[in-house]
Length: 426
Image 1 (cartoon, rainbow, N blue to C red):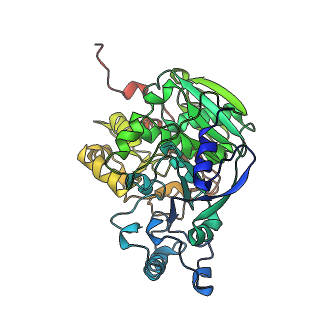
Image 2: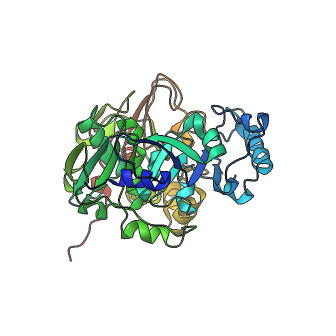
Image 3: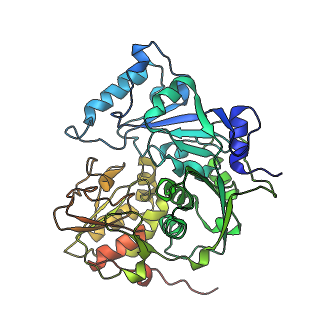
């Protein structure tokens, strides 16, 4: 019987052949932590004289609490620096102010996340890195204990395949793909791993794949795994910190369910308000007035997002009634975006561009964008629960970066199609 990517990765990490329903302990390749430590028992290391299993494979990214008066604030940064020094975490593994970025973007850029491994992230959206042909899991409060042992307990879950054909249309990004999956397959994917296959994947840039995998927890999946191809290998070539082997599903791999999608039939989607699962095509929601627009967080803010938004905004001005904020996902992305002129385009259009991180996605983060009573925001961020970006009386709609940019221009939820550059036929 053929095996899935999931079964193969867990087998490699546990040192034994495992299949659906089997239990085991998997060796983790790297652990990535953000700056919000409040939900973890970090003191148990010192309390019990426990050492980190491999300090060189532990990363910290400063991405959430950048204001002294919010959460742990900058005082938490000092705690991280002190803890890391005492436990031997290399200084280069602390992505401090000036090098900061979101905790499931930094490991990708820095070559830590590799195919056929088990990656652990503390944040809920750690599945984002399943785009790298690996098992990426959110450990949350268990993160320190995994850091102490280097192992994570697992049960090989149900596995579902999503087979993609066709070509991704202009103006459709990863958020639209996972919104469509969430809308179509609600209740069918709880606790499973979603594996992707098919020729359609070739038309999906790596940033788009990461944005799709970012939606795993909202769909209800344990994680998502993409196959390796030239797109991934080209990205890893200058970054990978050690040799690796890719993993592929066998021809006769057995899945609990298989779903077929033609990417050419996908379109921009809108989620909200008040619930990420309240989803509709953009064409059915257009025209709703907005007061604020945001591009950033771990589900947008990558180069693909910024490039699309810059194309929409180039040479145009944001509506006077809208305030717009753009927060690149990492320092590296901000640098490249500046080199390509995207940052200048945003500023010229009237947007505020902030330092890298999670930004306005969550009201406790560093951002000038906090919603007031009765306001409506169109955003590329992760969730739209009431109070997520400020007032509990504000309304939040989720959309891709192109839709956010077009909506900022028109002052209402709008389709970006009319703003794309015309492509001359060959």
